[in-house]
Image (cartoon, rainbow, N blue to C red; front, side, top):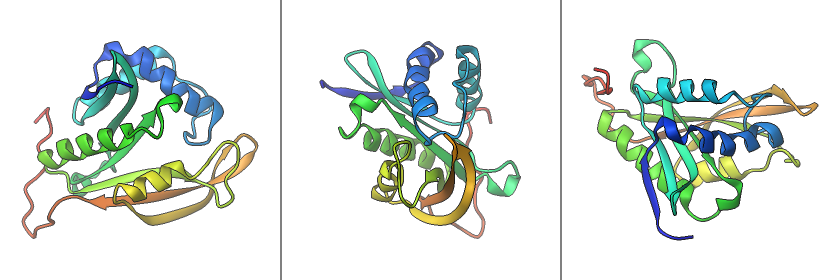
Length: 186
């Protein structure tokens, strides 16, 4: 693999990013979606996310190999310093450092905005199976996230129950008088 660049996603990336995501929907329990979204629906998701949060692509030789983005953790104003992070890497490009590059770039952008807490919602199985391994929780732990919540048998896919965990990373100083984050639309 040649030089990898990290850049802001654009809507022209949607077909390739959807191709990456489709694998996770159709063949894994990493995503709890049952059906791959349509291209139009995926583009709209990208558009809505990028209005306020970073949406990044890892690219080599002009081909997107993975993507990461952030979104609101919850809708109430008091949660505005926290966000949910998401990452998907093409299965053929895993283990090459793309995830780290994407998440480090995402973290820098979110920190610059004034975000303090990064939260990741991750599918979990104690035993692991052909649909779910420990790659995501292990990756997040390696990136400095810690497990803060565990919900049992809350997702049902492929005829079996899966747990869900939340992992969190704090990236900024929490002050008594905190300035609000700077979102692009502000």
